[in-house]
Image (cartoon, rainbow, N blue to C red; front, side, top):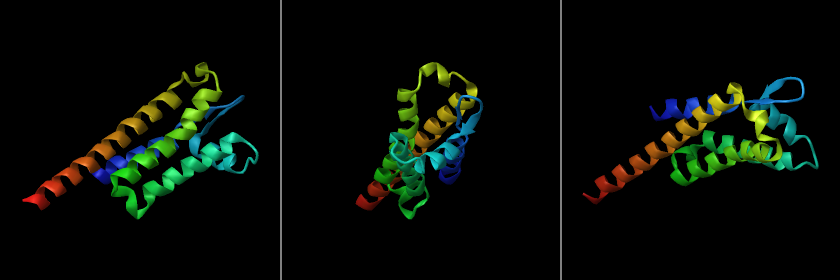
Amino acid sequence: MKTLIRLVSIISYMSIILTGQMIGIPLILWLVFSIFNFGNIDQLFAIFGFIGIILNLSKLKNNIVVAILSFLLMLSPIVSRLVQVPIEMFEYLGFQIPLIIFILTYLTYILIIAKEKILISKSNKN
């Protein structure tokens, strides 16, 4: 169940659509293009987003600190865009629904990890 929730959160993260002047592009493509856009603050946030994805796929993904750090790093490019662009640009379901699914499922994943750690520590004390 934990793996399925994490997988849903990653898929929803990658399917967030950012609108441009003419068309919308998935967030994952925006991250790739922004990494190679040198001299721009978006490059830093794109790198943060990719580090978050890599942490999420690493062996340390079940560590609660790594999971929280990964969540914050993955959220940073989205928050950056929300601050840089007028909020009216994000009033469409292609952005809102995947973002809500990502946030809810990833927070659920973090809570499941925390609950497992608490249960393990309680069983070790007995």
